[in-house]
Length: 126
Image 1 (tube, rainbow, N blue to C red):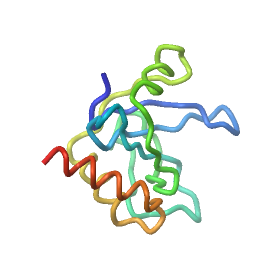
Image 2 (image 1 turned 45 degrees about the vertical axis):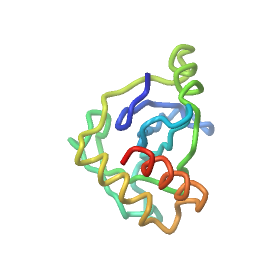
Image 3 (image 1 turned 60 degrees about the vertical axis):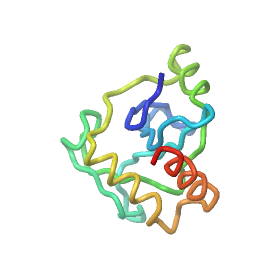
């Protein structure tokens, strides 16, 4: 069962590079909000930057790319893990989870519908 702070890898659709995804909400009606960690590049959003040691998967400067945030079903992630198209990784620390959550709301790149659903999901947990 997926929980807030869990992570998983999925290969990039354009190549063999895998990206780390972070579950940033508790499941609500079978859905979660996830955010993508990508390598830092010249034009990357730098609201939340990550360095080696922030998570065991991170080996170089990375960022959370909020433009790629998604709402997905827990079943789709769990099926991908069972099928081998996704791989579970270590959960993020409470500190990193909080940074990722705050960044989702602060980012100008987060789709508005995802911000709204995030607020709904988190309101249900308070």
